[in-house]
Length: 189
Length: 189
DNA sequence: CCAATAATAGACTGTTTGGTCTAATTAAAA
DNA sequence: TTTTAATTAGACCAAACAGTCTATTATTGG
Image 1 (cartoon, rainbow over the protein chains, first blue to last red):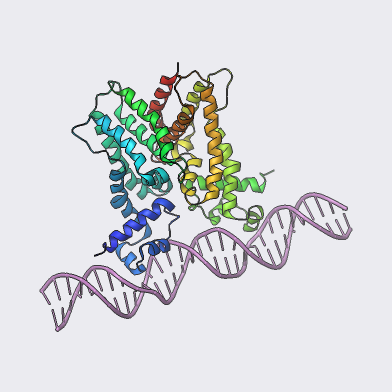
Image 2 (image 1 turned 60 degrees about the vertical axis):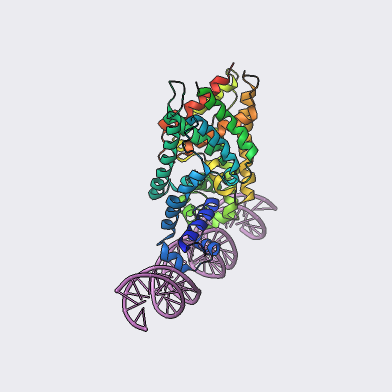
């Protein structure tokens, strides 16, 4: 038994928008990708915008957990979970090749559409708060500001995987990110 | 006496594409923005793509020098010029609000168009080489890899200004980037 | 079984897209 | 001045765009 139609649509739209962007993805492309008729598509979603907003909250949302493995592990200090997660990013080939899907959509849509800005920010805040939690659950030098540090980490990881998408390699990511891990290790006590 | 037509077009296209992206900018928007007839536009540029590629090499190119003030100063060590430049980024409001124009176009177009990838990479390499030069002209800890460090710096600055465009503030940039400057200072001897 | 609703199917529509074309006008060269 | 080329002007075009509409088929509940 095949995947329910609505889910199939969300998967196809996530994939297409991730690579081509919102304005670079047409309804025709979406219909072709998931092989369903137009009537079905507009039965589940009233517009392209609503559809992509659903992708944000129902797909990108989940992808973030899959791409950045930041779940608290009892056996490890928070900062070590974080360091491991940063290294694991290099294993996600699509991430290193195309950058963060949330960051990409953010840059394209947030400046021109408030609804996207809000939806994207919700997910961003969840990610940042997870990192803050891990940092707080760590022995760090007393003057460390975990709020700004968490944003620094996200900025650096996202920045690293956004340098020349479609050619940025795992090797390049690892070299660049070494400086981030050096810095983070220097904050441990 | 007004600006030559071709220059006026490039200025308008830079501005529109910076904010709306390539696919988010239509020829109609461009014509309206610079108030010239279609015939003139297609007299100077044979297509939209060729026009935006000209913006890359003739406008973004120059904007990079204006946004990131990385010229070698005899009186300063390279690393100090670099640190000053990183702070000066916060003064460029549009940069902190909308992110780096090169990075934005790169993420949108490089994965789907080789010509853009090549044009953008040329400018990226110039920027990176400037930073490498500054780093080489500095007294740093002997094991410092200036190649990967230069990419780390670009990744972090671009990442910082790309977090939530249209709302990311100067204050936020300063807080985030403090960690970068801390790390760089720690590399000095 | 039957009625009501959900889902599928795709032809169709008005608008916008990037781009062409011919004619008129201005500027430069002879 | 006359000729040649550069530029301006915008009507026009086919294709692509997001979205609508009516009809039909599955599915579900009573």
